[in-house]
Length: 231
Image 1: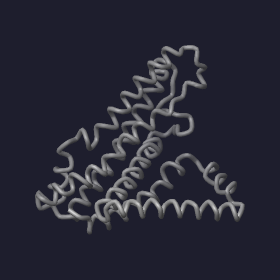
Image 2 (image 1 turned 135 degrees about the horizontal axis):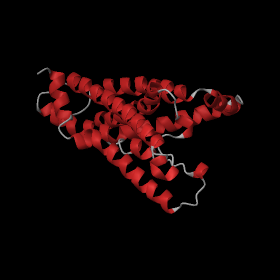
Image 3 (image 1 turned 90 degrees about the vertical axis):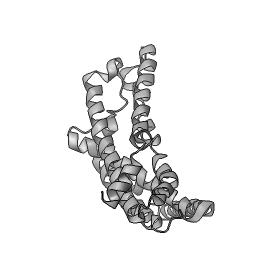
Image 4 (image 1 turned 60 degrees about the horizontal axis):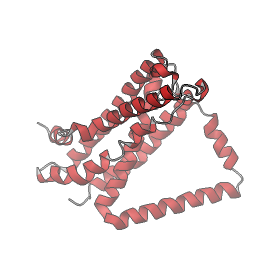
């Protein structure tokens, strides 16, 4: 067994924490929202749209912090190298994104075939993210999951490396950077142009292409920090 396979096996010992929670969440969301719209049968069809899909992504936000802060020290105690742990986590993030893309695409087709889970609602196959092509639809669902995992992994690595003070510095730095961007856009009267640029882009670009930048930035930063993270 290679070091990466050993690290991957450790990280997948508890599949419920690694992969299953978000699928439990979307299943519960579908059931709850379907019951609501079944009871509220007078709601017009164009208003039978729910944002409960966010539960799928938000429920997975704790996976990477769990891996970094609990599984990482355990892996080090079992003589797993940092490089092997990083490679295994990359495989986990990629698998999570693929499962999200394929699984949600399948559910969106089921939602369409059942006329909105038999109550004419739209929870997964939302109007503003719908793609006719199954491959591009999977990208729209899957890439944001990789971006979210990369960002939460980076935040966890900051805490693992620098402790609470590191998180504080990161939060302050992000707040200052955000404020500088807002000031710059305001002074140059570019707020409208900035918003128009992204609103004019196809949804495939907004949700599948640009998030890849976040994957590279935060994923690269996370990999560097994990090489010096405290055990």
